[in-house]
Image (cartoon, rainbow, N blue to C red):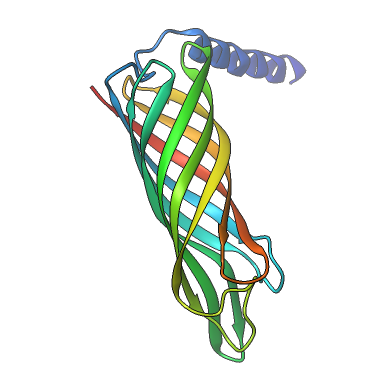
Length: 191
């Protein structure tokens, strides 16, 4: 029994080593485009914020060098959500950002990345009487984001990744509104 368990663990580790060490054509190179589709858990980090919910995001970038891409990103992030007495209160944010991403290659099919973005945030509140972090009406405000993540490229032109992104913008209230997104991405490279 112990021998079978040891052999299966060794087999899984060997398969992981083979998968991680093999070369792949998946990393985007200069003059190629990358499309990222993501689903995230989003949570506001301001006063009176309720439980976070979900965000759906899309971004497209063009590789200027083998490490740097510039592009656009948008999405729909529900950053505060609560059901109270049959009424659903939520605060959704729609970012429209110009985004720069710098990739660090750590293996043939693995990359880390750091990103910075700037643009506009559309606030879509459906709230009760209490504003959340100074947001109480629909408005568009300037802001930005910073983030970091990990990408694992497979099947030549597609990859899977995880990303943490911190977003912030002027809500028109006394404080800066901020929220984070913990996102899982599916990426495609256009040759």
